[in-house]
Length: 425
Image 1 (cartoon, rainbow, N blue to C red):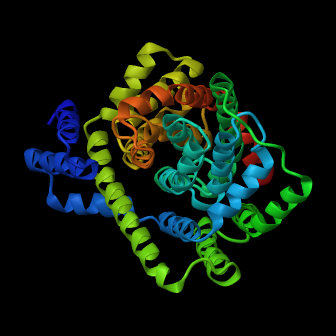
Image 2 (image 1 turned 180 degrees about the vertical axis):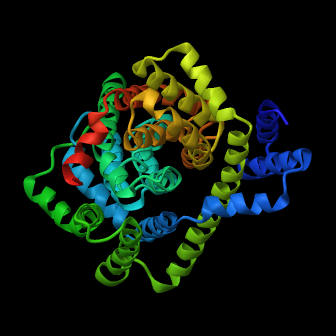
Image 3 (image 1 turned 135 degrees about the vertical axis):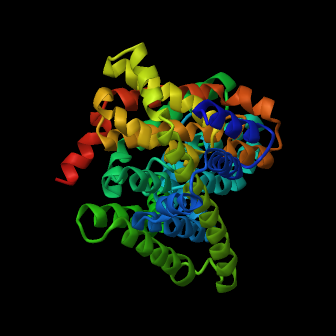
């Protein structure tokens, strides 16, 4: 079966509304039937995709983020962000961005950030006079910081697929996460000047230190995770388990803002999300094996190299390719499918696996905030009660800023490689 037919089958099923995971599984099984591939291969390739010890970190980080979202962390971090930046032009919109950065160190997930931030910040921004579209798009755009700043669930998945140190990936995401935050803060400032949105008075120093004291224990979590991994005290999987324990300690013992009866729904929700992700990874690994068997990786490499052999041009082409595919394919699926192919191109790209990982995750995550399949877009639209068309018009300035950021990260390797080399020699 030609690889073109396989890909058309996948996209055809996806376009008619078949869930992505089922579309991948359906196309793969049809390939097995049509080519006479032994059926045991299906199980072997699916198990090989999910049988990875580092992947254990993903459900634990998701559970830690869900526990902290279910408690009072959002209120504490929002108060701190408001004290730090709420007086800048854009007020609550700036707070929205900064609190996403602070929250990124807890959850590692864009959808968790969009849901948690959206439920709090979108009504607050609308009440303060911000238009509903701006409230939605700022929340959506800033949620993408979550998978870049450590800890990051997509980095865990990339590290498992590419056999790269997850600790190095976590460290490599720090500078890009800060740059991304800066790009968004600048964009919010420009858009707020155009809209003449009001600000508030600067917090008194005493109020800032009170907010910092209340959020200090929350801010310790990313420091414990990153510091422990860098110091060789524990592995990323152990760090994820410690994050769960620390989240339970904060929300159920110290602050007592999470009742024991609320824990079961949180655990079940994290379990359902884990099952979905693991199934997607398993069937994507099977689909990826089929693509490699049919020579798709070499075809893609030849197509890119036929355009140019210059590393700078190739990096730009890869970013464009990831942005386009990210609009159409769910992020986890795309990472599992595209990473083995791009790793074969890394010598021509002159990108080490850590730099490539940050570039891949950053570029594919932008699909979460854009039509037609952006999950974060649908989450914030439901909260803000706006249409996809209205959202699409409003997101453009922020999307352009993030695209510029993606190219900067791809073209300037030291932004991702310097800190891991410094801290993890």
